[in-house]
Image 1: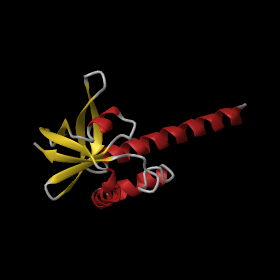
Image 2: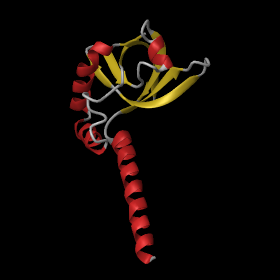
Image 3: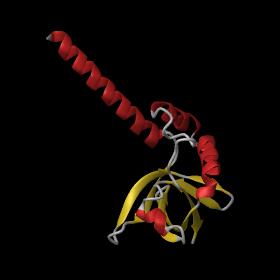
Image 4: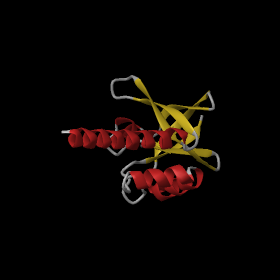
Amino acid sequence: MKRTFKFIALLLGAIVLYGTSLVALSELGGEVATLTRPESDGSTKNIRVWIVDSDNDSWIEHGTDESYWIKQSSDGVEVSIIRDEKEQKYEAFANRESHDFYHKLRREKYAFADKMLDILSFGATSKENCSGVPVRLVLK
């Protein structure tokens, strides 16, 4: 009976450690911005995202082809990004063709955290397995 409890305690500890590691890498692995995006019911939702920059545009990846806001962003949709406690309005455009480009920029900016998340997620966050749609943000 003691062995069973020890095993369960170790298993639960490993699960908690795994989950904590994922959250810590995501939140502490580099710059994290807050995206305010539209929802289908007319409300907005705040999401924490990694953000990268190239030239005068910024890029995020949050959502799949089935996401309401990704569908809306095909023609451009207004979103807000909070970076360094400053909120800015952007026009967001889904850009599936920039998938490799986004992942390259993300690996450069978030190097260790990006690589560790890829390892801990068993490759689910790698560009080869990612189903997310990159979104180009153009400052308004």
